Length: 142
Image 1 (cartoon, rainbow, N blue to C red):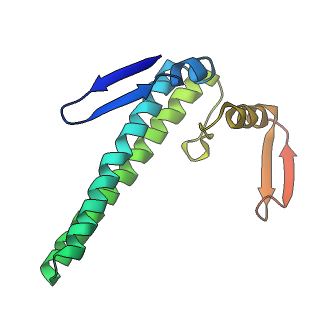
Image 2: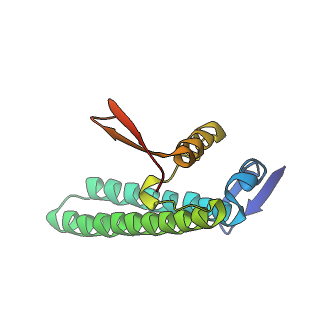
């Protein structure tokens, strides 16, 4: 199903496959948070590129200081915002799946196979690895 959505200056076509593919796996609340997270970063990254281009084109120490402050603010907003959205997503997954999901250990949502593998690994028992995965151990569940 194709949806045409327009916003003031932005016109985009979104393919609504997310709900059909992921609704049974992660629930509607998590889908809404994934969409929010996907819309959050691009404007901030575009602003970051504009700031860096403006600083490169306008020479002078005052421009570099202002650009440094703007880049720091932009990256701070990006990191805090994405971290906050990840914590909300982890809480939503915890409610939907019924076991605790840490925001630092969120699964990949790029493919259903990767998510299903993460889900099997998480529910089968706790795994611990050392030396970059060279040594692996499965611990009994708590």
